Image (cartoon, rainbow, N blue to C red; front, top):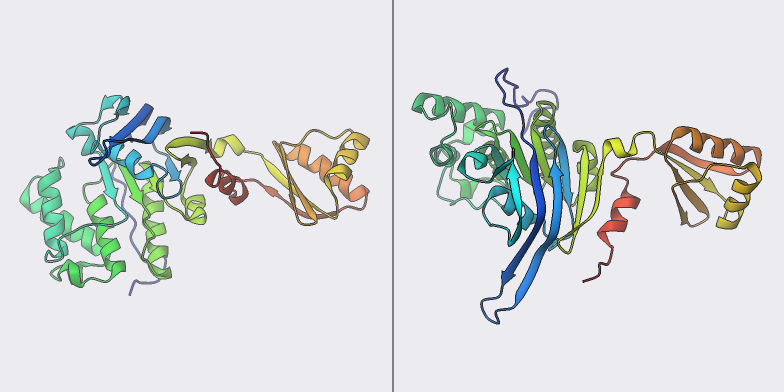
Length: 333
C-alpha cells in the first residue's frame, strides 16, 4: 500500500544535473519486409518532429500508428530506412543511449530475478558515469527501491510481484541512472488509483527538474496534466503537432439554442471578429477564438441578443474534441 499523497519523494534535482538534450527526428521513413511474402510495409512515413529540451511531450496515436517504432528509432534499437534521428545533434549511439531512461509498456524481466538483481544488471549494462563503483551502485539501488517503496520486496522474485509493483520497478529501472531523457510508454498501465497518483507525482518531479520527457499514452487526461507539447501519429504520419504556447490566450464560447445561420447573422449584424473554428453539438454551438478579446466581444453580443451562454473558458492543446478528430482522421495512402 502506498502512503498518502504528499509523503512520497519525487526524484531530487542535483545541482550538477546536466542540461537536457534536444531530440530531432528528421524526414524519417521506416520500411520493414515480410519474411514470408517479402512484402514492404511502411511503418513510419516521412516523419519530422522535434522533442525540445526540458519539455514534456505527448506522443499519441492508435495501436499501429507508429509510436513504438518511433521510440525504437530514438533508442537506436532500429535504424531508419530514410532520414535521421539525432540527440544533441549526434547520431544515436552508446553515449546517447546512456542519456535515456526507458519505461516500456510491458517490461519483459525474467520472473526468477529479484528487484535488486534487476537494477544491478541494469547498471552493469548501462555503466552510467558516477555509478560504476560498487558502493555507489549499491547505494543508488537502495535509494531507488526505497523511492518506489519496493525496498521491503527487494529479494522477492519479480514473477511474484503484483502488476502495480512491477510498474514501480520499471520506473526505478528507467530512472536509477538519472537520465536527461525519459521515455514512458503507457506509464499508468495496470496501476490502481493510488499507484496512478504516485506515478503522476514522480513524472511531475522529473518534469520540474528540466528533463526531456516523451510520454506515450491513450489517456488524454494524463497527457493533458503532464505534457507541454502534443504530437499525434496516424498510420505512421504526423497529423497534429502543437505546443502550449500555440494556444496561449485561446478561448472557447459555447452558445445554446442557436444554429449556424443565426451565428453568421449575429457576426454580420454586430460586426464581430472571425472565430477560428465552429462545432455543432446538439442544440449548442462551440466557437473557438485565438484570443480572449474576440471571445468576450462575441459573448457580450450573444447576451445582448438573449442567447444563452453555456460556457466560456480557455482552450487547451489537449482539448479532447481536437485530439479525437485527429485520432479518427482517415489519411490518404
